[in-house]
Length: 150
Image (cartoon, rainbow, N blue to C red; front, side):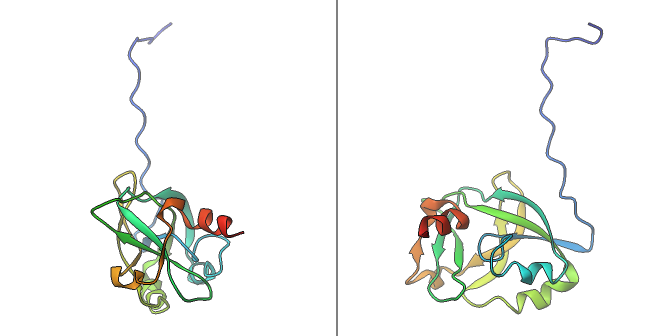
């Protein structure tokens, strides 16, 4: 056939995030995910869901003490890291400040590396805040952990 070649095409690269210049990409891995108790903190600020993805395999994941609601903490590590499922949301950058004010210690926002090499802003926990927490890294995601709790 016309144009036929024995060479295979390279797979297309993923399209860049469909965000506007006035939005910030936010990675959430716990109670702020779709359908979970704190998701309204995102949607009330005009955030919109982009995609489900995962971190690079360099994190430990913890169920933090306290609540309700119960919350996880993601901690970057140099040893025994795992990939953790999360969601990406686009939030109006102008709303990030008042959103940050709702995040209790030991959680905060910082750079999160994704499995495909991208880096976005997302929830992280201070390592010291994991004292007394349960390591749930083997679940590889908050929903899997919640499902296992019954």
